[in-house]
Amino acid sequence: VLGFGGEREAVSKAGLTAADLVAARRREPAAVTRVYTAYAPALFRFFMAAVGDRHQAEDLTGTTFVSAIESLPRFRGPIEALGGWLFQIARHDLYDHRRRQSRSRIEPLEDNLNEAARVAGADDPEELALDRVDAGRVVAAMRQLSDDQRQVLLLRMAGGLSAPEVAEVLGKTTGAVKALQHRGLASLARVLGLRSPEQPKEPPYPSPDPGRLTSQEEEER
Amino acid sequence: MPRPKPNKLHDELDALLDGRPVELTDELAPLAEAADALRAELAAYQLDPQVADRHLERVLHGSATVVPLPVRGQPSGWDLRRRVAAVVLAAALVLAPATMASAAALPGQAMYPFKRAIEQLRIASVQWSPGREAVERTRVADTRVDEVQRLTDLEMFTQLPTALTAMTNAMTAARAAVDEARRKGEPVAKVEAQLNGVMVAGAQVTRTVQVVTAAAAAKGPAPLSGDILRAIQTAVDQSKEVLPPVAPPTTGATTPTSTIEQPAKAPGSTVGTTKTSPTIPLPPPTAEATTTTTEPPTTTTPTTTTTPPTSDDEATPGSNGGGGSGGDDNKGPNDRSPLEVTPSTTPPGP
Image 1 (tube, rainbow over the protein chains, first blue to last red):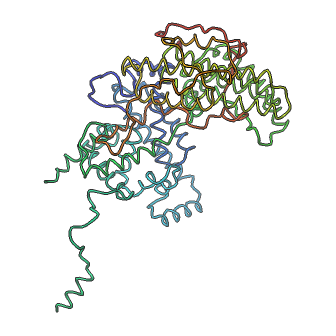
Image 2: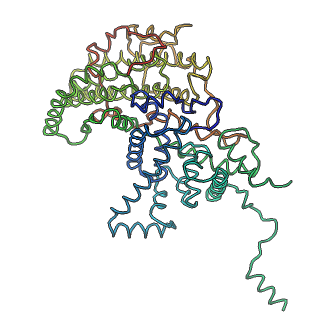
Image 3: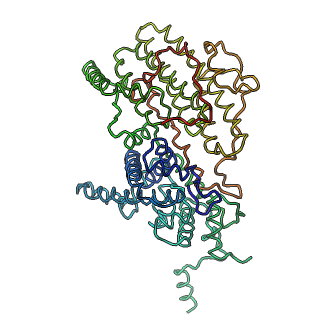
């Protein structure tokens, strides 16, 4: 949502200004509403893609927003950094949510989820949750990605953060984030059956078949 | 042709995702396509405006809660209605000062959640009578029209998509309530005439929104972003499915009140067609896999996504939908008084 080093320094792409930030710190309703309107949709998309459940995503969005507004007096960054800061809170809340879920999960259900995840080819039930997202195949296909790739793509595409902002949120370099988003999208393209630059459709020569080579070698012998 | 270095490819992909112009090479094309597909799916996740109201309430008015209403069509019975009535009476005592204070609140303002909550209470209090519910929901629809009008006057464009959709949903809910009252054998001639007048007013104010936003867009990108324009256009298009057609205004008739003050006509009596109405000039669509650039991810995230998608509770009478006049008007839908329009540059009070 926000970009660093833009020409209009005091105005975010979401239309928020430094004055909005000051007013929101004082919990002035109009400013708080503007902050919510600017970021809540992105937060909701982020949580929806992460947990795959509308009700939980709504709760997480509300929780994150309330936490953010309560913590806003401690936020000392420029308005351009507000998006990244919000998603740091969002990731923290998501982590807490998953931890609570894992604690409250009763044993038989956990067994069932683990079994379901195993059958579905997912490493854990959280990945399986991605399969159950209402929207369908693309978000579900993200479970094929590594955790880092998935987080980068979610923050970038669902959260609308720039690569430097994602790097700030994840504690990585911008270069690492760019590499992760490249690999993530390449993997996603492969899973979706799109033509991938790393896997050309027609190999330039017949693929070596170890079995055939072995038999050829035996024939040569 | 030498393959570009990985860093260059990463940079080009990053630029593509940011919407900066990049030559779409064979290597980038599938990545852009995957990004577009992902972005399109993510865009389908829309935050329910009722949920948004609740979130804002938690921050702005921690103690204000919306009373859930029984859903019409499910077996409710007198016991439930008595319980709801008791809650309404109790809440009315608590909320009376808020009722007065929130009467003129607009979407985005501090007291607006109170206004909607009070509307729900009012609807809950009359659900024992389909006829009275129809009257109340018609009043709600009238209030939504009034809000769209005032938001347009104040050029609060970011709130318009939500307000327009809420208006459309309120119209739908009121129409359904009138139909149900008729099915129950209650006299509906008067309320139906009132609703028809409200719907004509809604069509006129929607037309005004188009004119005003088109004029604002023509001034430049400063007051209106492309996403807000798109959201407004979408909401306007949705409203046309419900509202009667309205004649295009005469040239220069951009004063919103000039249309709304006209005597209401029955939907069938209006002339003109929406085909001639100008559409809001929109920037190019957000994502096109075949173009050489891809819109930045920010284009799917802005304020417009709070535009209510399909599920406003007001869409079904008797559901949790907020609506109602909030005590701000005792006037009927047909005796709409001229709006007290403040200068358009005056920001709304909190």
